[in-house]
Amino acid sequence: MTPLPPLLSNSLDALSDPVILIDGRKTILFFNKAAGLAWPSLVIGMPLSFTLRAPDLVEALDHVIASQDGERDGVFSERHPVERDFSFRVRNVQESEPYLSRTAPAALVILRDLTEARRLESMRVDFVANASHELRTPLASLIGFIETLQGPAREDPKAQARFLSIMREQGRRMARLIDDLLSLSRVEMSEHRRPIDLVDMTSVIQQSVDTLRPTASARGVTLEIIAPNEPCPLPGDRDELLRVVENLVENGIKYGQSGGRVEIDLKPVGVDPTDDMALSVRDFGEGIAPEHLPRLTERFYRVDASASRESGGTGLGLAIVKHIVNRHRGRLVIESEKGQGSVFRVLLPRTTSSA
Image 1 (cartoon, helix red, strand yellow):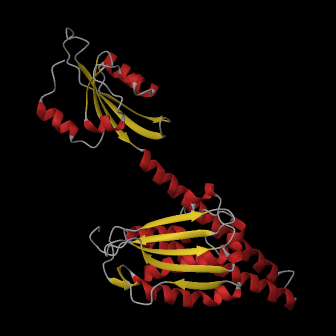
Image 2: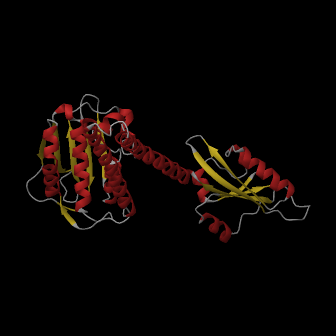
Image 3: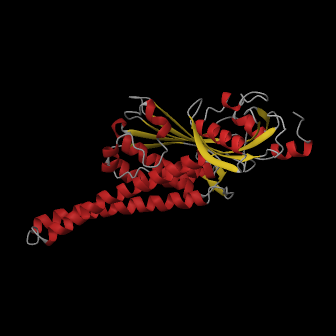
């Protein structure tokens, strides 16, 4: 085959979607850079089916080439080496003259990677389902207690007092969940804008610990700050960084309660003034099994769902922390071993050069 004109091949290479040109034998005549990146095993002169084992795509090619029909659309999935989903469009590019060789261009295959879009859609569906479930449970309790108070317990003051107390807790549970949902939404909307105001992390830690000391004392947990007394200015949003510290320390109190102590540490990761600052929250509780660690920042993911709900958790705390840290262009690192406690470490840049 004669090579494509440079202007045409350069134009196809500039496209972000994979494009493959096929002849009448379903052999590859050309593929752009996006196709080469998506399927490194593509080779000019090789049948397309050697690389793309997609029966629906092959069938569409057969139809377009045999009938010289305009185009066919479809989707296919790959499971190896990783799971990916693609849509495709096969367009006829054959000349009408019957004497042309079967090695002449016959069809153009245009592909689009749907993997990320489907992952996001699946996350959205799961999120709505989980949020609905989390709200439905306390709401059902409230409705049940209200019906009981209107009926069998109408004249029972002791039952009324007990039910009203439970109803108040269920109402607070829904309020906490709604507050966390709104917080998560606000952070996600502004995640692309990095905050640049200087915030003193030392005072943020001190304020967060002062706020949570009563909660820690009630659970028999000591909070210990291992951080310099001098100010430590970082670019950030003070309210969001307060939320990060409070969420991590509160988790340490709840889930590391058996260790009796939570340490909050702030120090640079290196000696260079531009090195990140590491905020570490360590508990000495039961620890977390390794299979749970990669999923801890997923929305509504809990290692122990019943224990989390009993302690007032909504399942959104670490998801909020992750998005706030992302907005600050930092990193969240989680280390834990069963029986050895857990460390949640946030690495925050001290400059805005990486914004």
